[in-house]
Amino acid sequence: MQFRSPVFRTPLLPAAMAAALLAACAQPAPEAPKPTGKSNVAMVAEIQAAGERDKSVINVHPLIDPGITALQAAARDDERNGQYDAAAAKLDMALKRNPESPDVLQDRAELAVYMGNYELASKLAQQSWSLGSKQGPLCARNWQTIVEIRQHANDAAGAEAANKNVEACREPGIQRF
Image (cartoon, rainbow, N blue to C red):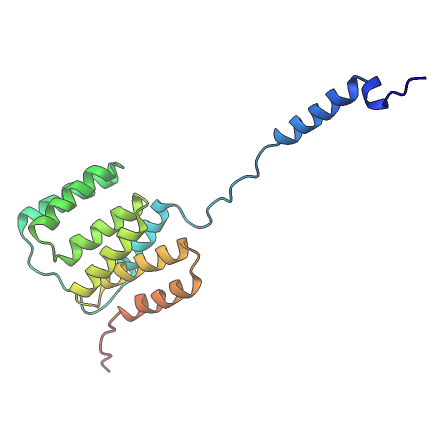
């Protein structure tokens, strides 16, 4: 009498095992975690709103080269039309003319947020703050940029610290009786 293994008598068993292995390999990969937080557009809206909300008695407007003002206006038009690369190019030209212009640096930081370049946005906002008046709407926009970037990076402590700086930008008026 010849002994045969039951595995070899059933030709369907190896095929079923192979099918099970292939099915396990074909399982969909787990979904990548979706980023939490706001869109880049919502982040920039918060940054700009921080400047609009600031009702400081101090709001410094340095004298600006009319050519730089024209480039900023054209960049704002491009930004409104979603042409972020074109807007960034115009602001980069303005920065070549005056690399220490706090308002142009902040405008360029906001475009960097639109474009998802958070490292550049943070660097430009900090540079703008260091060159600016450290009070008023521009200061609030500088620090709100940092708040938004830190929130995007899930750095709650950093965002809270930056938010305190947003509040410190406001210079209240003297109350007269």
